[in-house]
Image (tube, rainbow, N blue to C red; front, side, top):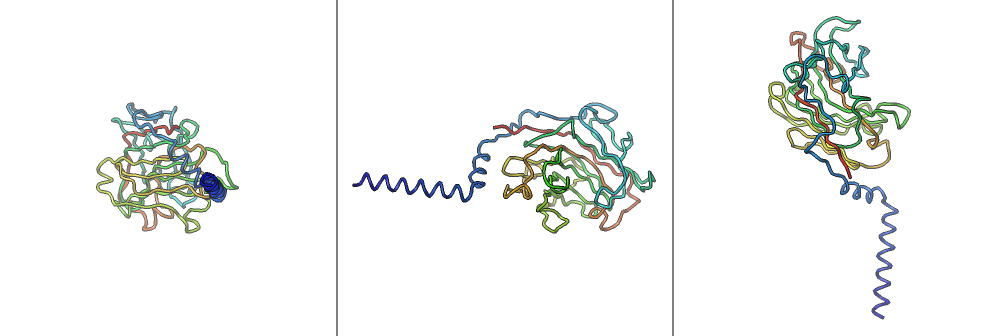
Length: 281
């Protein structure tokens, strides 16, 4: 009799477990992937230490070029000129100038690793010193390499902002994600910010850890924003390859909220290194 009761109890527990899995399969999956991925921080799988001089390494970096506002009413024209993007003294220099170019009032550069460094999960580190002054808007961020979801490349396929900074709020650092469901254009942005010190006078390490179930943004080893996987691709399109972008925008819907101080130029972002560490099962 006791054996029959025990078997009946075990059967009931099994039925409840199966029912819960059917009702919440995503939760079970998230536990599995969270425990099965590791990031090897000892050896980058892709990096640029900038131990050379001249133009950025063409095997690792391409350029976005143009001056059409880039969807944010930005005021700069992105070039591939040496004065806007160069490597010297062991640092990558992205430099914005006040100068007329192709109907724009400023020039700058936007480097991209698309087609040269595309990644699915991992740890991404950028050691950088930021520009300063009202109107500057530097960033190190990631976009999907291909359009896999929805009818629009952005925001449907996602964006990860490892570091954003606006010059009118000098020591505040921002980390954000954007998706079809969560983005600033519809007032549902997901992100956070943190007060740091001397971001334009000293180098800090800005990093992102991206796993199948969460994205974490940090500065100098301190995480200040975590976004957990939930729902369908509208909430989480972060299961395809992404690439890196490095740039200084001028003005725009956010960076130009308090105008542009033309007396500050030229302004530069210095990058000591970019390193990517692989996440593996």
